[in-house]
Image 1 (cartoon, rainbow, N blue to C red):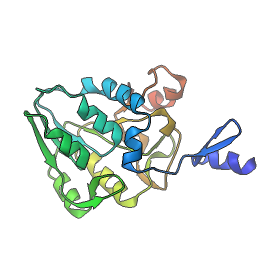
Image 2: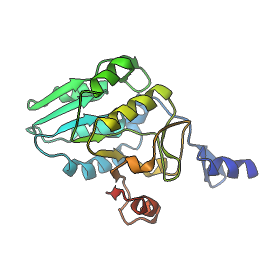
Image 3: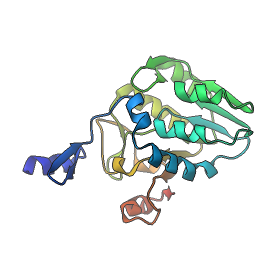
Length: 212
């Protein structure tokens, strides 16, 4: 019991009735794509009004980010840079979106591109808004990932964006991984399935984030 309490305090698991569940196991993209699909769709609908005609966006990898692309108005005009292969494929269905797939090495687990070439392209971008995919979010530990190369890429995405938003299912809140992307204050907008007034979100309000 003491070991479970310590692991829970460190953000590696969440205690539930009768035991605990791991928060550090990250399933494959295909598995995550169908997990909690209704919640992800709900979060994407809350984020959609952030997107305005004519914007330049960076859309990071992640299944919730893919849900956002799925519900874009068919006639919207945007420029979208993405390191996500599924997102890039979906963008082909929008006649007025100039989609750019950031080239690089393929991370098979996430169906994303990473590495030197991806980072070099990001240096040339000053996007209006990015949607950052993130594995774990904690007020004290910040934004963290389980893959070091992904962590470096996400730092590049933040640096290439005027404003940073992230769509996060609430079970990621209060958890952490091994590699730090940045402090929580590097997020401008946090979107979850919870009402913005939920007490779980109060610490993020207190840090100055816009919470949707």
